Image 1 (cartoon, helix red, strand yellow):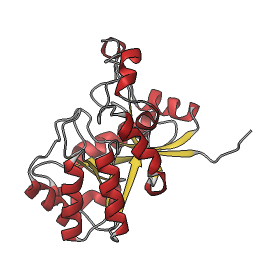
Image 2: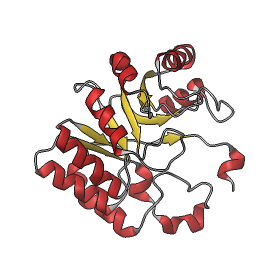
Image 3: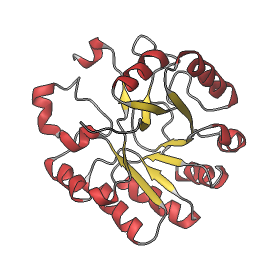
Image 4: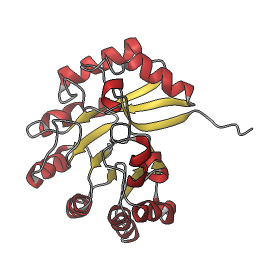
Length: 237
């Protein structure tokens, strides 16, 4: 038997507020504890999203009432909240920037908006990005120009992990995470598990992408589940 300390999952979606028919703080953190996870980092793409003082305090209140393990909440970057978020940043686990299409309304395509958040968010606090494919290179380039640390979420493709390796080897302050499903599943597995159950963002990729993750295990800083509960009728499609 292997004895381990409680695990920390830095990337989960607990659906509260706004989608408690899928999950809430109580059920999500109970599931975390059952799996040996004693702290979770909760993403901000709820309904409403955690994008200002009011919504963030709502999230904290709900978490305080329902959570069964330790937790911290992220704030969500939007088109017009860079300055406001900087004022309350010390209360959050970090700032989440959604730079590619995913399950949220917080996506930002405009690099000038990225720049505003890079410049206003306190440098000593985590800044994390959902960045896929070429967007990974773009956000790393901006981080290099502005000279600030950045964390890349759920790396899934060869092009992503290889550009992160290049950035690290050049001296950039960049960290990254990989989700277990990208290490153990590929797009070929969708034939067995089904499109509904296999729908994740970033999507399951090729066997070559999977191999690249294993080949670059030495530069992966942590593993994160990107847990996000779906309703039964959604995952069965």
